Amino acid sequence: MNIKVGDTVAVIAGKDRFTKDKKGNKVRTTGVVIKSFPKENRVVVKGVNIVKKHERSTQEDSKGQILEVEAPIHVSNVMILDPKQKVPTRIGYKVVEGKKVRYAKVSGEILDK
Image (tube, rainbow, N blue to C red; front, side, top):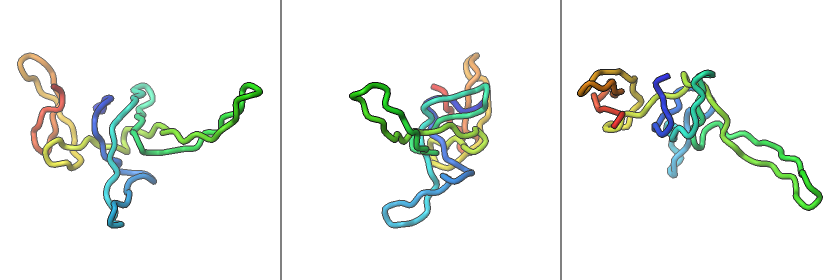
């Protein structure tokens, strides 16, 4: 899986693909990966795929509530943003100073520091 925790990604498919900016124009949804599930090929992106979870009251004095949390989305529905040009890009690997690093194919910028 090419995407890691802390990467800035753009949503390229699904219901959260576009959002509206302050002027009302459609813009691509972006966010930071906060959790990764490599075995299931899923990631949790901050502010994307918000679902409501109903929480039952567990004690006499605590109240039940409805929480809004981010649900995981499939890794194929997101793409890493190029650090220079801020456009979705594919990821490549190359060896720099004896170390394998990820780089953005659009600009050639190295993603792993």
